[in-house]
Length: 299
Image (cartoon, rainbow, N blue to C red):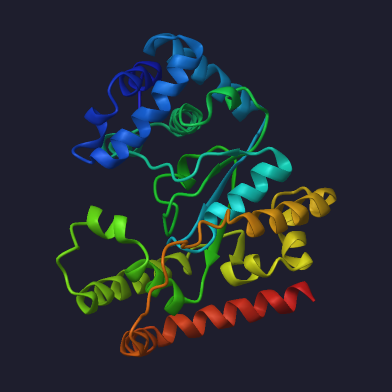
C-alpha cells in the first residue's frame, strides 16, 4: 500500500467508493467522518495528514488496540462500555475494513499497513478523542480478526462467548431489524433458525481455533461478580483499577448498557429450542469446557 495519505484522503472524500455496494457500512463510516470534518473544519487532505501524524505517534508509543470479538448478542457493547467508562478507553464499536482496502493491504508493506489501520481506526473515533493517549477498542465480529491482527502494530484480543443455544435464539428471534437487512423477513422462522445454526457453528469453530489472549462470558458479565472485574482489569493491564471497573460493570448492567433485547416479550416454541440443542451439541460442550477452565483459573 503506497501513498497512504492519498488513499486515506480519498476514503474520507467518498467512503462508498470503497465499500462496493455495502451501503450500510458506507453510511456508518461516512457519518463518523462527517462529524470529524465538521468538528475540526478540515478538508480531506488536511484531515488525512493530521490523522496519520497522530497514528505515527500512537505506534511509536506502543498504544494498543483492543479487539473484542464475538458473534453478536454476547456482551461486546457492555464490555466496551465498561472499559470506556472506567478507564477512558476509545470505544469505536464495530469497525470493518472495506473490500478495496483489504485488497490493498494484501499487497502492502508491513509498516505501511499498520500505519494505515491505526489511521483508519482513528478516523472512526469520536472527534474529541483522536488526540487521547488511550487504548482503542474495536468490537468487529471477526472470528479470527481477519485483516486486522496482522496489520495492527500493538494489540490484545478477547473473545466473548455466550451459551450458543441462547445466542442463536437471540439472533433468530430478537434481531428483527438485522433480519430485514439480510432480506430474510419472508423466510420462515424454522428456515431462518437453521441458517443461524450453520453460521453460529461456523463462527465458533473458527474463533475457538484462534489464539485469543482472553475469553469472557456473557453470563459472567451479567452476574457482576467481582472476579469478573478482576479478569477485565488484568486483561486491560489496569489491575489497580479493578474496583473502578467493578463499579462501572455494575452500573452498566443496571442501566442496560449490555444492549440486551428490550422489546416486547417473545414466546419461542420449545421445538425450536430442541432443534438448536440438537444441532449445537459439540459447540455447547466446548462452551462449557472453556467456561469451567476459566472458572478454575480464577479460583
